[in-house]
Amino acid sequence: MIDSRCGLHCTGCEWKETNGCGGCIETMGHPFHGECPIAICCQDKGLMHCGECDIIPCAKLYGYSYLDSEHGDKPQGARVEVCRCWAAESGKPAWRNVLLTSAGFEDMDGKQKSNIADCFREMLGKSANDAKVLFIPTTAVNNDAKEMDDWCRRELIHIGILPENITTYDIDGSLYEDDAMTYDVIYFTGGDTGYLLRRIKETGFDIIIKKMVYTNKVYVGVSAGSIIATPNIGNPFDESTAGLCLVNAYLSVHCPENMELRTDLPLPHIPLTDNQALVVTCDGYKVVEG
Image (cartoon, rainbow, N blue to C red; front, side):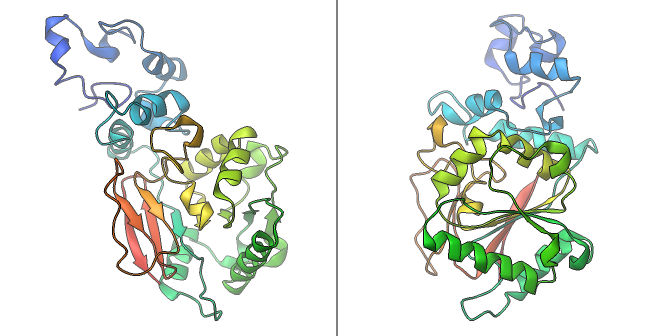
C-alpha cells in the first residue's frame, strides 16, 4: 500500500495516532511535524511518490535516506527501495539495464568473458552494429587512465560496436539531455573514481545519467565507472562523496577470489573479481561470472 510520498511507511508510525496525523498524502504534504519538502516536491511534479521520479534519489531524498546514521533509514536507502518497488508494481517504467564490471568484457589476454558480454547484448536488445555509445573516460590525464580508455574502446569494437558509433564525452557540460537520450549505451571507463564523480556532479551530468537509466538506456561501468553507481565512494555518511545510488550495496573491484566481506558498512558489501560483473535492475541485483 502506498502510504507516503518518500517510501517511509506512515502506517506503522508511532506518532500517527497520538498526533492525529493523516500522513503526508492525506495532509497534502503537511504531516504533524510541519511541511515535508519531499512530499511537496512530489505534488508539484504531479507524482504519487518518489519512485515515479526519473532522478531518484534526488539530493533531498538522499539526505533523508542515506546520510543520518542515527535517525536515517536502516538499512540505508530503505525508502528508496520501497519507492522503486511501488513504481514497478504499479506498472511505471522499471529500469533493468545496469551492468557493473570490475574489468570490462575481456581478460588481459583479449579473451571475451562470454557471460558478461551476453548480458550486455541482452540489455542492448538490438544489433551491436546499430547501437550508439556515449563513451565516458575518466578525463584524468595520467597514462594509466589513457591506456584504460583505449582498452575499453577496443572491447566495445570487439563486441560489435562500430567505431563511428562511439562518441567520447569528457564531462565538460556541453552535453544536453535531449542529445544524451539519442544514445543506446552510456559506458564509463576506469581510473580515478573521485575525479570522475566530482566532474559528474559539477556539470550536472549525474541528473542526465539517472534519466538515461530510468528510460532503460544501458549503463556499463568498468572499475571506477562501477563504483560511482553505489550509494557512496567514501564514508557512507559523507554527502560530498555520495554516488549515483543505482545499486543499494557497496562494491570493491579487482578483488581476489574469496575476499573477506567488509562488516563495517551499512549495506551489503560485494567484492568483484576481474571475471565478475553485477547485473542491476530497479528491484535487485545478481553477480554474473564471466
